[in-house]
Amino acid sequence: MGPTHFGVDSHGIASPADRMFLLRTRGSRLSLPDSGNQTDRVLRDRKGRIARKLRVSVTDRCNFACLFCMPEKDKISWIAQEQILNFDEIEKVVSVLASLGIEKVRITGGEPLLRRDLEDLIQRIVSIRGIRSVDMTTNGWHLERKALALRRAGLRGVTVSLHSLRSDRFAKISGVDALPRVLKGIEKALDAGLNPVKINSVAIRGYNDDEILDLIEYARERRISIRFIEFMPLDGLGMWNYDRVVPGKEIIDAVSRRYPLEARGRGTSETSSLWRFKDGRGDLGLITPMSEPFCDDCDRVRLTADGKLLSCLFDTEYHDLRHIVRNGGTENELADTILKAVWKKPDGVGYMPWIKDGWAKPRNMNAIGG
Image 1 (cartoon, rainbow, N blue to C red):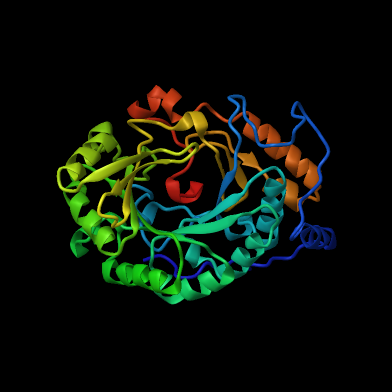
Image 2 (tube, rainbow, N blue to C red):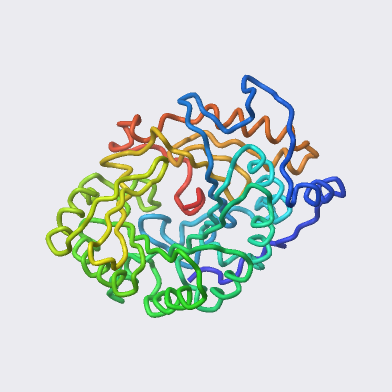
């Protein structure tokens, strides 16, 4: 079962100039001069989409090995620890991104709670002016122990990956016999006051598609939101094919036969199309990148654990920010690189029909950041 702690020095060694920059940007917005072809200094791409949300991966490591995410355990190649951004470096990048309009941050991995002292990073990001919320996605392994500390650090909500309620099947999908521990983590997150608490479940035909209604009932009993995600070709085992995708329409048809639903639609730039249970016991979301892509109003960018900016989950061009941060680059140089990278954002998976036939992905999901 992989490591339980990520042994990177969370604080690292920052230069005096970097430390002055961090002190200057906590609680204040950067003022950056115009550069390049953009004059309004916002994260706009060629399609006119403006990025407002950032996913920050703090590690590629995970103590699970979910079959839709990672290669077989003996074939995993972790990112070298010296390549991982320390907390000062992450804070610097997020501060610049906030100055360019990023408002919401989601902490991801790998498994983010393997990163030591993660509460410190959350406190730092929460304090950056312009950041309205910080949430996290986790496999739930450490949540029972960490939920209260995360809440006190300023974490708003948490999304827990839960793909089965059957212990044997949970172990088959995740590679770890951990269902009771994950369920306890969800309860502890609710007790700690994290809000919202959500469940994400990847629906895979032949693996867990017969548990969709069971998972919904589990969420309804706790009045929490559940999201079903279509299986995407980002797995490390190479098992993806379109026959294993359970389309969102199929899910909603099955659910609506049991529960009265009220369609709420998909908000601008949101990934989920939402339905409310008419009895008020939670809501259901469908994330449909394969059957009904939502690329035209995407407002997300990703920062990988080793400092690469990724403007699209399916992009194959990675923009290295670590090199700038570690080689004395100024915040203006960092901002210029980010603006140019976002400007080149691909149209999205909806415009990549070859994805369904297979593609040479540069990284597995754990190394991209969920």
